[in-house]
Image 1: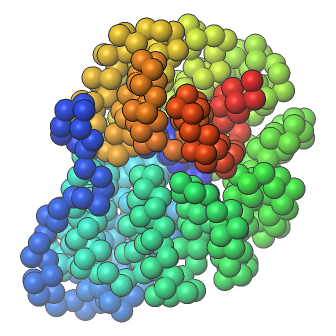
Image 2: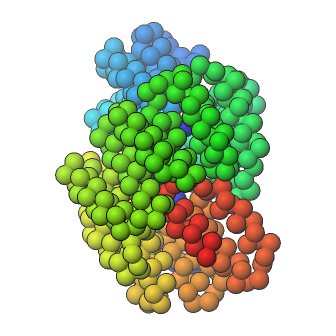
Image 3: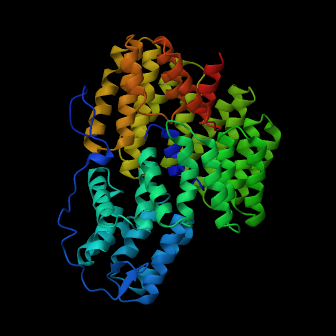
Length: 506
């Protein structure tokens, strides 16, 4: 699966990712939000000249615009985001009043460079669209807000209104996946496949979801992706996804083979080229890894991707045991990101510098420094992503303060996380808040509460390592082993994995 920044690895780097209520009570989860359009099912659909995939009435009378949006949605589902955005843009040129065209344009663009003008146009035009199109557009718009409760409610409305539409099931499942609700997303992908066993996008996402659930199933993950490749044998992404998931499972040789298959189909498929370098890094073949990452750098489609690839290259210094050189290169790379005014890259690299600092005091200094950067609105970064980045930084500050025995000093960060979770109602921020509380409970010797709170973020290697320690303190060897198994399948060449794996080895 092409990374497309996730958002520049926010979904990977944050890996921990609200609601009202006191610190002692847990906020409602995604599935508990109430419908905000209870009468949607009763409202008659407005007459429309076109139907999306023959089912959903659209506001446009243009056959060409409808065809473009169908192609745009299919390309979005198949992780061809640039193509999806281009097709949606073209549909708006054909019909400037087509709400879904603007909605899909902004929805696809949010994964890389947010399209604020398309978002505003979608918001303005939605009210004039037929009920189902209006609901879909309103949900796409709501997913880009810093307050996600409306998005949750509208998603529930969509699933109620169109329970057997494979495209709606996929879009909702994918959004839940990136909100780290892997269990519910898996069920939606599986339902889409029950309706259409040849619906390839769900197979792609299931390949990841089967690995990232609480009980990883690498056999099911591989089977889903092999079927995905059977359905799309001439597309690079199935092999790119297989390469990534096989690396998670420790099959590095198989990973390299799949990445090379993707490149044989599309020689400029830079995520597979980068994947080869990342896999070679984990294999300890550092010079080969650098050479392959340099090839990926030449393929990168934008400055942001190049900065991320450079970051991955610098990380090799730490894997090969040259941390001082690595820290010098990271500092220079962060300065480069500042000069390019790229908030995502500054976050990515800045948090990496903190994780890879020489000692805990220096790590806390680095975290405080980047907290000050992301505590205020940042150009070229959405407020939703800035809030998520800030939450991850605050959670790491709590972790370090607890390691230093300064538990009381962590109260400011805990309160700020609580406020962020309440104000944004973002599940990723909530997970950061709860896992931060878990560190405090652990430091105070309350290991059962620590395990419970830390378990809110089971995709962060550093957090999962702490969960293992909590269950070991409780004498629960079986559950500690379950979490060791989960940690095993989080295997990537990130600072978090490096830190967690080396801590576990000691």
